[in-house]
Image (cartoon, rainbow, N blue to C red):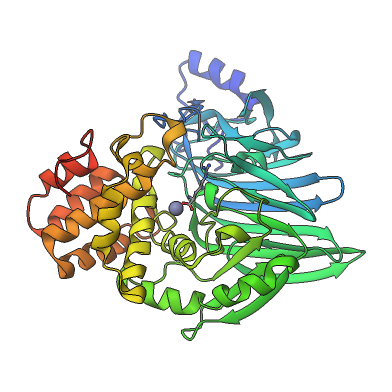
Length: 468
Ligand code: ARG
Ligand code: ZN
């Protein structure tokens, strides 16, 4: 039986209950359902973004079908969201910024939709039982917006000269699709992109098909491994696209704006070599595709580690930043922070990867970079594990002092154990989420010793220690 109560039957169920009949979700009693849900939470209480994400369910898969017209800037989307209820649900929220909701359907029945700011509240016709898998289909449209972050940088949907690019860290993905936009709810994705013929579209993962009909080109992109929504991307415009494979057979797809392609080609050609080096240090590459997207300088203010296909404005495409964004595929993308307070687990590791690159390729010991970071005042504004506010998530202490924490562990435990920790951490939480407390416990477990001083002074301590 279908363990769901139709709203129309709810009154009948109530009457039967009053009359002394039992009614249970799993068919123990009267066969008309009886799930009495409560609304899922409107946020996940992230310390910096309390409304980000939603409680009561876990998304397992997003199927996004998007048509974009670069000229008008209009997006027409259908999001099919497959999720499992984590509680009996009478209603649940999705995050969406801007865009009009044209229809909402849950398991084939229309659902009512309420909007307050970036919170969409959906009330399905029938309550959903805990553990049930349900599918929500939202049709939506409009001109997606660019979001200004607490630190002043731009994310969400960014128009470029010939199209647009979607960047989502920390909260921008709600500008182009409805979802559970907190890093703790990871899911697989299929993204279908339809653009005018002659324009290209790129997303994460593997391109599984591309066809042109009636003046429009549609491509389909599959992400088989879980992805946090902030790492989803689409790029629409003119690109010089290159498809190849690494020596181990990993598909590589790079897309560069034609005006920057000649400049970016030599570095992009190093992706297979850099990944091979990172695999030696960090363990097996966690995804089934790689590549990059390169836009013109100014199309975004920063590079981003969008999953399998990091994004770079040309002026950010240096070998250090390429190494940094590729390292995020292990640290951030595969092992994802449990909440945004744990950002140093992303950025400290990615910066340390740059220091390792300098050591292995340029004969600059990590100790040299460590000492330079130690001497820089801006790195001492706050402890990496405790940024004072959302505005500070991308500040130097999260990056440089985060890397200093790793260097202090290395000094204390020695190289062999240190590399064991780096790769072991990526293996232990592969495709999952982890917190700072998980990391400190894990590092001590592998080291077989107490690292309390490293945590107290370097990870959590206020101010600059006397000696490096
Ligand atoms: N995670 C990106 C990187 O380290 C930086 C993203 C900056 N985003 C922002 N909203 N400030 O490469
Ligand atoms: Zn980074």
